[in-house]
Image (cartoon, rainbow, N blue to C red; front, top):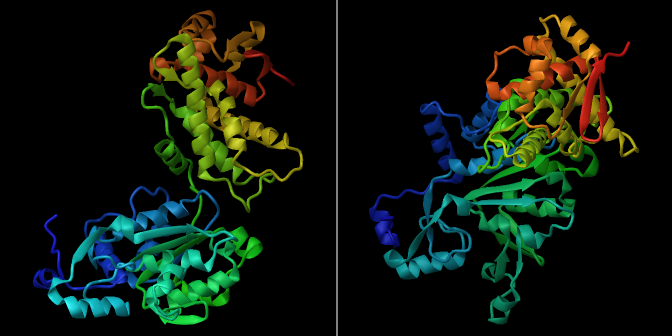
Length: 461
């Protein structure tokens, strides 16, 4: 990097200081002119959250994101760092990232006056200008604002001297973005200290008041339930935010699938085939859960639930493929049982019975299978297939090799005719499972489980 290394060279290069809001606004404008979203990688927020965020950043508002868990609040906050300039100059050694042409500490001003054009300049990356803190009840003023440094006092400095302070996260984020997650969990006395630093432009430590004109964009997140129950924001701090943006879960199955498959982490050294019905069933499960009466809607059903379920069913297919020495690992509908521990672990069922979560999860899975079965086979007559399986019950195993399905179809011609050949050949086991499990979900076939084997037979009245 061929950047100026002292104050004189910086001035000669034509450098002009600008505030953090001016900097972000310019970079937002650059994205708008290039027809790019203000934040990349967000799905389902194109017509709701992102336009509100664009307007807030353009006008220079501090922002609070309000929404349930798993709605991308933290991801959006961290992505804001990409709207900062990649490199900015600071006075070398400044604890507050001071602009060489706009210093704020008396000691830095004295240094600039004494060293003049030869004052050393260093450059910091945007990553060093973003600080994030999870609000917890044990958070202290020292963590956020700072504390008197006893070593500096022992060296002969006065307590009221700004140079005696060991600065906390907020001052050290000067000329950057400071983010605090779950803001209502912050004790009220700490909120007051935060307000002083961000609004009144001073800090109060040990009874000493020090003027500190910090240049910070303040961003926070909060859960609506915590916002009113577990904690609260003091009115002056709540009023400090120029814009409150309400986030939401994916409103369509398509958005849920895009997020789920994009965020799901599958092993790179194993080939995994996940046919379309699998992602549709998991996404439908999540959508149904967000309206289920037994599931706490205050806590929400995070997108992490569908992501974890997607990863779990892939893991089940991988285990089977390794045991059978098969490549690729093909996910089957019967693998969806493996999704329940991951999915249920991320929902809160309003019951004292710990088993109720799995009951609700199993019911949601059956509903989702039924819906996706109707989507693929709803217009087909299943009478012949139901008669065939009723007369000759069919047995499958969770560890059964995919190659066994070809022999199975040869023995059940109505099943072969019903499933058809509209899918890739390697996906056949998944569609066979979908046909059978769908007929069970719609009560036209029965399903009995013994150990790892499942028997499909005559339906129930």
